[in-house]
Figure (cartoon, rainbow, N blue to C red):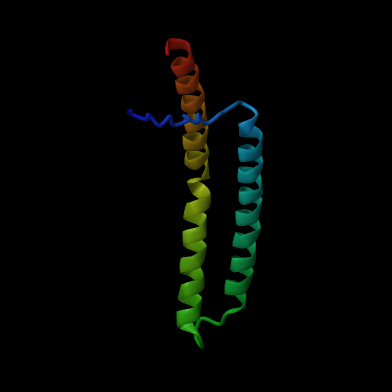
Amino acid sequence: MKTELKTEQKVAEFGIEDLLGIGLTFVVLGIGLTYGLNVQADVRGDINQTTAPEAYTAAGDSITAVGKLASKQGLIVTVVVAAVVIGILVRYLWVKYS
């Protein structure tokens, strides 16, 4: 006698309501990055460039890096929203045509 094992297929459920939490996360991230850049600029202003040039350069590099991350936030949000929307469409079409 052959025994068949049935596996349950779990389908991830996406919805438009998922975007609220994602949106709030990116708003908090933007606020954190903005205050972080302000603090880093203040710290760099307190460093004497002639007595500690390595620290001054490192602070400048840090500001540049965080600024690049903040400038890419719009792209990251677009990709996340597109992924959620594509997930919703795929799930809808999967249920409709299967």
